[in-house]
Length: 311
Image 1: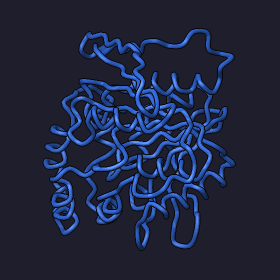
Image 2: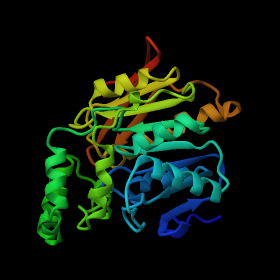
Image 3: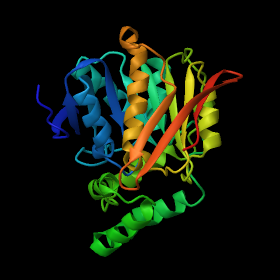
Image 4: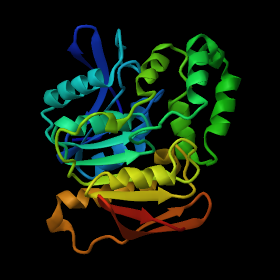
């Protein structure tokens, strides 16, 4: 089946709720990509297209209140989970690999509490303390009307220039496809994650699936220590740390994230795996620089946290 990239189909899930969904058929387990706050399905473009080319089933969508999807009258993580359940049922997807970015991580974590999941890839998001001190007042200012200033092209351009220290075609496209929203809904949707704490509720079942946590050394919102702690929550947790990456690492280091996804996928196709991968190698053509991230396993109290260090 030809790759249709991220062309969206509006799927009506229930009264007043339709989500913009991109889906490509392929091998199981399906990879389901969840974007973060103020984002949209295009945030995972490179990984969606890479995974589809590998022949895996892939699905991504604009969360309610974002992109081309309708909003909710009232937002909650539970509502996001119920719509994810309806989407997976619509496409007959069982036990997917959830790939979650930023505030998409709490949705993935809460989903994994009660539903079958083949694996989790958790990028730049964790279990608690996710909102830095400046976020709440800034988002409230934007909600109350400051967002309208972003109708000025020069302000969007200025914001793009400070969103990432990287400068190449992939991150440029990411920022072009994910401008600062001028509608109120994304800011309203964001508030459900403030004060989120995964440990505030009892776990219904052991989270024993393969989990890969990815953090960036230049990310002011999710640190290496937070990534280490998150990986340690899971008996099969591993941690990939990219020292030069910021919060938008799927676009800053897209090939590294692609290889990490491929590495995790080998766990579901053991007959195709000859030797366990010990490194992830990435050649940055724009800089003429080669990155090699060696895998070093280090036992923790509740699992194995793996570090991909150095360059």
